[in-house]
Every structure is written in C-alpha cells, then in structure tokens.
Length: 89
Image (tube, rainbow, N blue to C red; front, side, top):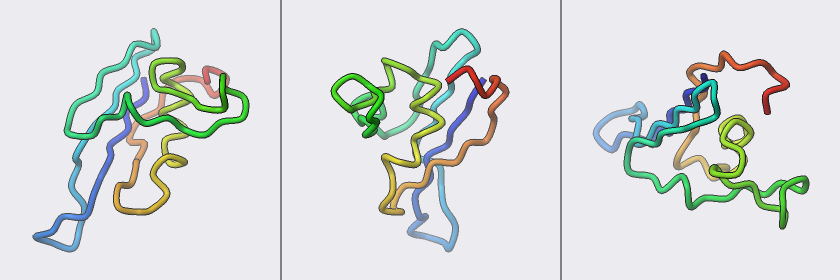
C-alpha cells in the first residue's frame, strides 16, 4: 500500500495541513480523499502514452512520482507509507 498526503501551508500557523490523501492498495485500486482533483493532474513522463502519466493509468507510478506535478512548493506531496515492492511501479 502507498499513502501520499498532499500538504499546503497552514495560513494560521507555521506548519502545513493535509488537504488531500491518496491511498493506493496492493491490488492497484486507489482512493482519493480531500479537496485536490488528483485524477485531473497529469505528470509529465516520457515513457507514458502521449508523455503524460495519469493517476488512473498507473496509480503506483503516479503516487511515487507525484512530487513532479507539485514542484512550486504550495502543495507538497509526502509519502507516508510505501509497502509495495520497488518493481511494482
């Protein structure tokens, strides 16, 4: 299982708060909770069809590569759990 928390700056404090969570199960099904439209955000990937990797196409690879889609720093993906083998992507 892979769990990724997407965190943004907390306007009321110095830390960050979780605004969305992506959970990818061992069978590659996934759930999204929160306010970010993660299924609509492609990641640039030369090996993917049309050079764009979508969450629906490969949830494991998308979760592990999510930092590429959020490079500006406003939202930061943090992998909090990753128990799938490295070759599962």
